[in-house]
Image (cartoon, rainbow, N blue to C red; front, side, top):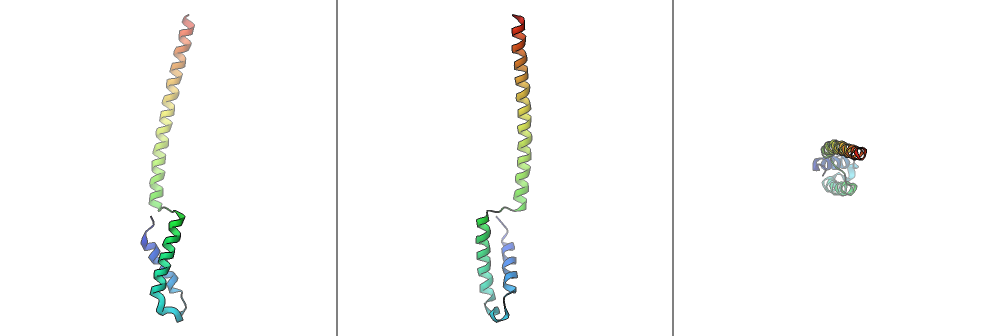
Length: 91
């Protein structure tokens, strides 16, 4: 989930650009901006950079393990095929 400080900062910035005649409502408007921003970003299903980087590391490790297993399987199949060929030659 995104940091709530980000929403607070965005809401405050938006509230600061409100015309002077409405400044007495700034706190209320800032609160409403914060709620709207949180709702909007929640619908986007975003992740933080840290979460993304963590998933990239997990995927990299998983990919390396998969490649190692694929290599082992290929070696086992190669050995198995060699044994079958050798037995046919013996007959």
